[in-house]
Amino acid sequence: MTDIPSDARVNGSSDRRPTRRDFLYIATAAASTVGVAAAIVPMISQFEPDKATLAAGGPVELDLSKVQPGQQVIVRWRDRPIFVINRPAAALKMLQDPKLLERLADPQSEQFQQPQYAQNWHRSAKPGYGVFVGICTHLGCIPLFYPSPSATEPAADWLGGYFCPCHGSKYDLAGRVFGGVPAPYNLPVPPYHFVNDHVIRIGENPPNATFDFGSIRQI
Ligand code: FES
Image 1 (tube, rainbow, N blue to C red):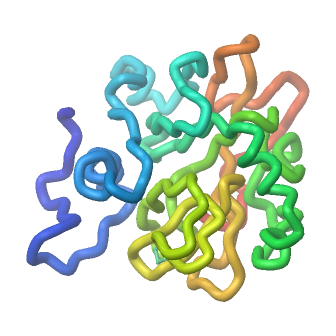
Image 2 (spheres, rainbow, N blue to C red):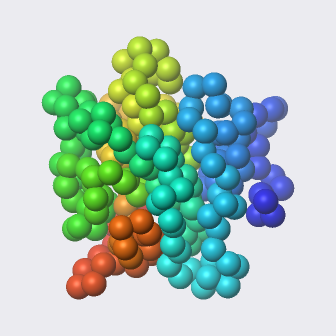
């Protein structure tokens, strides 16, 4: 790992909040220090494209066969962390549960935070895989991945999703934000498409789609 900012702090004495600039560090920390409750996040470097592609901000590809059911990996696109989750059947069932929907601020994804091809109940091109920009829409922290329901962790009556430790915002496994938390919008969905059954290309729309990532409400 070569891109960890030297001033990054997560634990320890500094009260500086982690920001989007720190995401490589956060991803590693999520695996090593929060791993008791949060799911393990594979190292980003496993999936990093070559440096020329990153520098150009071009599309990056991910082989989904490396992402096991219930697992999330993080790839980097345009210096942003992109969460890619393999959602099993139980998670998809939960995303449609009225008990969850009534707790969400924008359950139908009416705010422009995703391409048209992801404006659906699963906010993705295919239900089994979620692809989100992993930056909290409040102040830019990196939400942590807690995929399993829990009565207490990381918050009471947890249904599975993302928890932002900075100020307590909560998102479900489709990146939809809960009501009554500081974050105002769902997690953004980047442009992407399936190159074949197993490979996605992040940063590029499917043929005939014209989604402009720069036009979303907030990142
Ligand atoms: S930055 Fe996520 S809750 Fe404040």
